[in-house]
Image (cartoon, rainbow, N blue to C red; front, top):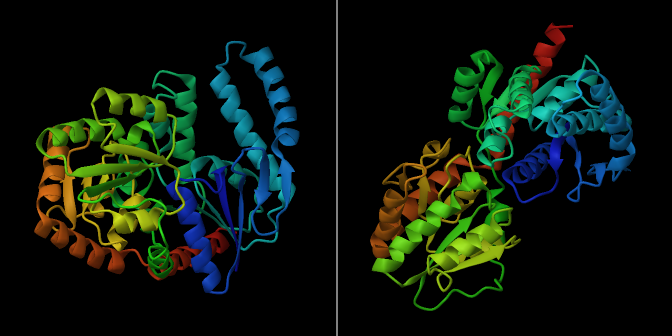
Length: 405
C-alpha cells in the first residue's frame, strides 16, 4: 500500500506524536509498504512531504486565505475573536497545502489529530479511505494550558472539531481505553467508530541507543530521578517540585533531571529556586540522548495532571526503571500499582512525595518494580504488535470504504 501519514502539528518535534509517527512509519516500511508524511516543518515556515522533500512556503498559502477570511468576517461578524480567525486560517491553509501536494496516488490516509482529519476529509478523493488516530482531546488540552476558556468562541470551535474529527473517516483509532471512554461519554461518538490500538516502539533500536556514551555523568552517591516531559501545564511539574521539596526535608541523597522544553521553563526554574531545590534539580532542556539518561537513572517520575498513553512511560519500562506516576488519563493502563510502579492521584503532592520516598529509600523495591516494569514493557510495547494491529484496522477501513461506494 501507499500510505500517507498526516500531522497538522510541526514535525518532527519533541512530543509523543512525532515518536508515534516515526515508529509507525518504520513498522509499515518494514512490512513493505510505502509511507509518506505530510506536516508543517519544525519552524512552522513550510508545509512539506518528508520522503520526497517537496515543500511550499506556508505564507504563500496562508496569507491570501487569511486576507479573504478577514474580509469575510469583517463584513458578517465584525466582533469575531482573533483566535477564531487564526484557527480557521490554519485549518483552511493546511487543506490547501494537502490539495497542492495531491492525494490521488495514496491507497489510505491516516491523520494524527482532528484538525487534519476534518480538513482532509473535505478534499480527499472519495475512494481513498481515511483513518484518524487521535492522541488526545484538543479542546481539553488547550483549556488546561490556559490558551482558551470554556466560555470563548474559540473553545466552541475546538470542541466542535473534536466531535467532527472523532466521527469523521472510516475508523477512528485511540491508543487507550481511557480516551475511547472520553470520546464516547463526553462527545457521544458511537462506540463502533472507535478502535483501541496501543502504541509501540522499536525496542531493539531503543536498547541499542541506551549503550551510547552520555555527556552527563551520574553524580557519585546520588540516586537519579529522571522526568522526561515537555514543560506544559498538563505535565504537572509544579506538583513534582513541591513533592521534591518535601523529599529534601527527609533525604538529600538524590538529584532530579528534568528533560524537555516548553513555555513554563522560566516559571518552573523560579519555583525551583523558591523551594530551595537549585542544587537538586537540573533542567536539561531538549535532549537527543534520553535512552542513555534513562540507563543512568534509578527511577522515572511523571507527575501528569492530564495525559493519554505517554511514550516516556513506555521508554522507562523498556529501560527497566521503576515508574512513579499519577493516575491521569491512560497511565493506569500502563502501570500496575505496586507491581510495575507506584501511582498517586493526579494533582496531589503528598501521595506523590510518599511514593518517591518509598522508592528512593528502598533498593529492593526499586529492583522489583524495575524488573517487573521491563517484563511488562517488552511484552506490551513491541513495534511489531502495533503494526499488526494498525494493518488490521487499515484493512477494515478499506473494506468499509468500498462498501460505501
